[in-house]
View 1: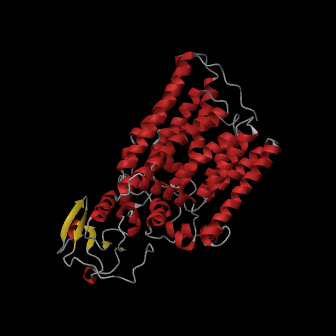
View 2: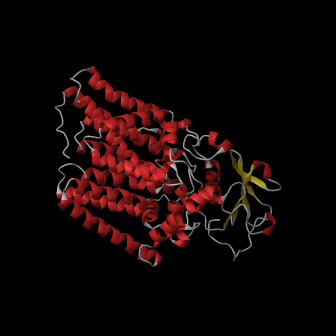
View 3: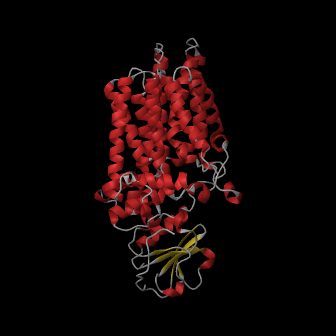
Length: 489
């Protein structure tokens, strides 16, 4: 289906459109980098132990190992890219956690801002005016949920940019053959970063087939087959079996239903409820404007909706799973807004509507500091009322402090489960790191503990933050421990 030809833009609208785009991208990037440099907390252990920690092990030679990287349930694309950032940081003299983590998290944040530009580009590909496309992109650039997840080294964040740019290139009505090949290739990369993005690849082929664009469909299929080969080859080289990570992952989640059994289930309407809780205005505006885009972008809407629906049908749900689809809905909102604007003559109202959309997105961003875990759909009970920012950040900052101590020869994290800390990515010291259920203080296997302020006993407090303290034990030295394991408990 062809996009409608864009209407002529008045000079005032042209200038406003560029100002809006610069504003939302610049402010969105600044917020994301600020969060990257100030929030040391965790949303979920995956942001450490499926990316930062295996990357730390690759670059520095030590790190905790989660079951996914012992049994091979993840491929090495994402940790490999993070390892490249760690290595680059080290070459720049940023060999301490504040350095390489700041660089890595800032890069992820900037990828989020680039993803908002991808939303703008996708809306423009479907004929939206620059002003309408910019207003739509603000629903990703400035909204609370994308901002909250932006600096976190998760596969959902890393893959959102290649997804939205890939579809912008490959699904644009009248796209050139080169653009189609490049778009399909970006989608192939997105699958290496996150297996679930295969839905977008299937969607691309379905839309091209529905358009009867057989040459583009054949080109896309060939490109995606090439990326599938690279996926299998990477697993063969790293895990010893073709498509090993995909097979183990699917066996755990689909055959054994492991995620639902281990981490719980949610009803079908979970994502609707949580999105309205976390950013109600943005969700409502996006949903309404997306409906107006249905006639002009049915294929894109079908792909985004299929991704959303398939995740809603899965028993285990987490809000972050939807991140790759959010920039698509922002682009659809831009197309829908453009549809509305085309029915309005040049007037103040025509300029005001896009600004109202940007204001809704900006208001969501301003209130992001008040997000609770309940708003994000995490945790039952009392913790759902707690602020979602910098969760366990004080403990991670004490890990950094511990790693700088010249006499530390072993550390036990007593206060919290090791999975809810930054591991060696924050500790950055090649000595044993023990979990809360590890050997007792009298064992002599470690000489420092990270514990709660009420559990100091006869040790010396080295540093404290929030409810946590770093304590030096009296015996001072550590007995070598040949039984210590780097497996994450």
